[in-house]
Amino acid sequence: MSLPSVAPAVSKVASQVASLTASPCAAAIVLFARLVTAVRGLWVGVEPVARQRVYYANHCSHGDVVLLWTVLPPRSRRVTRPVAGADYWMATPLRRFIGRRVFRALLIERGSTSIGSTPVGSTSVPAGKAAVERMAAALDDGDSLILFPEGTRNTGDSPLLPFRSGLHHLAQARPGVEFVPVWIAHLNRVLPRGEMVPVPLLCTVSFGPALPIEAGESGPAFLDRAHAALLALAREEQR
Amino acid sequence: MNAPPELFAVLGGAFALLVVATTIGQWLSRRRPVGHESPVIDNLNARINAWWAMVLLLGLACLAGDTAVILLFALCSFAALRECLTLTRTSRHDHRALTVAFFVVLPAQYLLIGQGWYGLYSIFIPVYAFLLLPILAALRGSTERFLVRVAETQWALMMAVFCLSHVPALLTLSIPGHETGGVLLIVWLVVTVQLSDVFQYVVGKLAGRHPIAPSLSPSKTREGTVGGIALAVSTGTALHGITPFSVTEAAALALVVTLMGFLGGLVLSAVKRDRGIKDWGHLIAGHGGVVDRLDSVLFAAPVFFHLVRYLHGVP
Image (cartoon, rainbow over all chains, first blue to last red):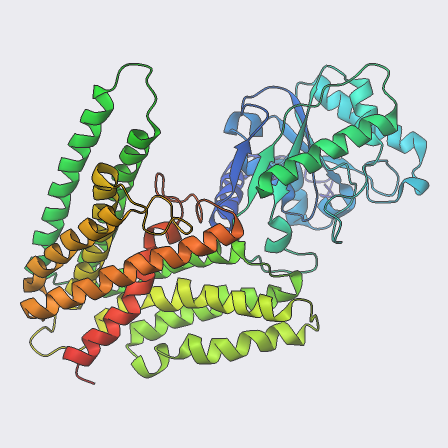
């Protein structure tokens, strides 16, 4: 917050107002998502219970976080934090408010992490490590996470881009947490990249079985398995 | 608001029927042994519960006046269009066209009906939307599967908006000696067509043996269809008093709308089979989507509207 330092009281009031408005905003966002997409959660492989999880999902639209969050049970919503790019969520005051106050997003500097939107080749290892450490710390606090391991929005014809390595590093760091694949269907048609007005279409969010973590598994092998599990879920949704 | 007294009588009848249905449903549910699953009975009770909500909603809208009825059907069109377009294979190049379909064409159609502008609302979608939407799609420059994309979008608009809007369009007909009765025409149409669906379902479940269209809709039977339509035509005929129709006219029109409704159900079943889905959506528990519930009304409404206008309307 870049509020004048001469007015700490103002800052405090603003912060309190923001906290108070966060909850009605969350309700409004959920209502809007339901009005436009009539979104349904399909709990195919796991139960909708408030257990600590890392939900990893396909990423086609900025609305992905909103839809996934909408279909979570309200109790889980409060403890589930999306991991998202700081460049997008800090860009305007409204996004800052929604990202930080409503979703409590774990904001990560992009272009410097293995989760962010730059290709793997340009990943700076120390920054990527720092990002995984912050995610692990959030898990240690008891929160669940929403992760988009493709690292960027998929706007091409391929159903799912290759995964970045951050998912594997996190799984290695916290092997006790459930890693749940989540397939978000049709949202790319509701709001394609570059469009402002959403087209109302029915969306579903499918939750697959938790991915068992195998001891000593290599990064590529784990990422392949996670990738395949998410694609299998997509095929199931289409049937 | 000056609701015709017949409206209360019909609503009273509908609630009486629902009380009977609920009693039977609950009795069937209690009768089965503990732990014995019966998806048919559960689905029956879900359907009955949804009927309570739908009858209440339509009843309240009718009591509240023409604007409320038009608004209710505009919302139904919105939900139905959303279900139809979800099934289409549009691409991101259709985004502009789809936005216009939802946020311009749909409201415009219902505004025109609110205005009673017959000359425009009866051709607005088949002429102007039909020409405008492919123009918008073409201007985006993508030719991939162009004909499929354009045709599917247009078909969705025709079904979900154009056809359904002919139900509230009945309010705009001026029929001598039946000045306050537009809403009763809606009630007569909806009651006849929907009761036909209900009777077909009930008779089919009780006495259905021979499938009537196994490749389209395996659950529909000859016994159910004939019995259901016969019962619905009798009801429609008995209700002729709330309409400007003679007894013969009421019987003939009831036969036309129930047959159109039955055939509409088959057509929309064919679409579902083609796209490999069981239901259009999940908005109405026990029934599926809005299109699942309204499929028969979609096909019956425009034909009914034009027949009534031809027989009794004053231009």
